[in-house]
Length: 294
Image (cartoon, rainbow, N blue to C red; front, side, top):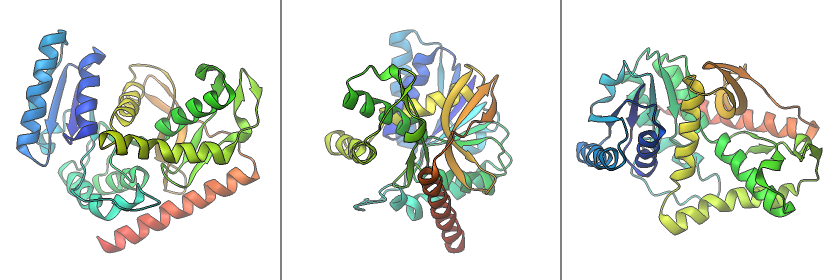
């Protein structure tokens, strides 16, 4: 497997380390807005592979040279300060969109899997797909939200995390939909303290950023999970942002078999359906306004 990694920041560094440990990534090609950062990450990863004996070769390259990669992880971030008190991920749209448009031009008609990490991930996954013509674009975010949901609910109910089954879908952001009506614990329906869960989902990334500067390991794990399933390395269900019939990219459960996706939207009650409609409208409006500006 040959993987391209664009962006050598916090998430890119973590993705590189996880790929080195995966055992299935044979070659990793790294590109960044700064050649110095790309070379630095490659050098650090070379040290890692030598110390651990990981069978992964690491090379500095350019996005244009990644056409033969089986998958590309897109995690660039524009240099801007995000001071938004709410809709924090959406606040990066105007700053990050030009980077994604530029990469889409460099990767026109790319035929591998493109995993979008840069926020707002749902809008930028759509932007990259429509500007590049790539047919296999997924965004991460819903997997992280769902993992945080399971962890939060398990702690609230004092049960093992593995006992919790349920999804967070829609936008990776303030318009996320907690699928409380179909959530189970030990296979049984449960009353979900939705507002308490929502507050914790919002607090966790802030807590991480306040403590270590930026979220990195969770998103990197979600990127690796998306790669593992979409490349056919493992079968099973995961949550990724993918194109809906409306043309909007939304986080949804997707079951992969040998790398072939099957969308598995969970049943929703009336309130959850209304929330998903609102998320769809919000993301479509954001995309429309963005394309008018750029």
